[in-house]
Length: 110
Length: 113
Image 1 (cartoon, chains in turn red, brown):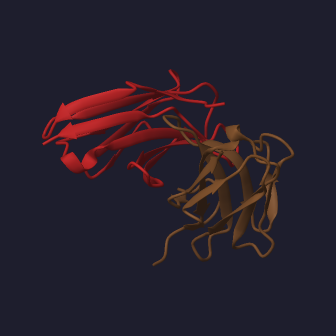
Image 2: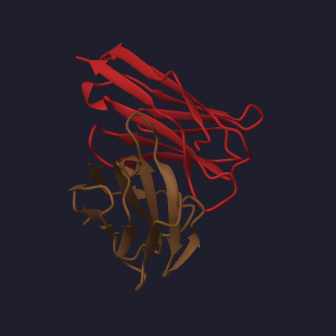
């Protein structure tokens, strides 16, 4: 079974626009991670945010975490065609394994 | 440096056959994970090794699935009496320690005819 749900399931934007993806989860966590997956490839780790953190930045990525609402968001600013991929959130719900959401498929048009 | 390597990249076999999928993790990574990913879904956890031992195998769907990591490095996922429902991409990931970011291989696409 999958712990998280990403929203929206699919997102299409133009280059230069911002993309926002949301993730909701069900049980308490130690940390939440975001991964990217290009078609036919493995997942690439983007950013990890701990349960006691509220916001984290990495380059054009901004992640927020609201543990009271059990939700997180990933913002990609000034998107590029190369950002086209599926994006997944993953939570550990206080164990050593990751439970992934269903993913958001992002399409960035040049 | 080398990333996580999975072989074969594709495997097509008949229903009822036995298959082995191999994962070479990043050197020095103590944690190794196996996931299964169906089309349009996120990866689904199967099993996690810390060193040589399976620390959590709660995701293995039934006793046809088994995995080993005898020397704490390379791991093999074994599926007996394959069924068409086993068709999926099997992903392997490694991490320096558990609860650290995971590094994924490109997966083995398994097709059961």
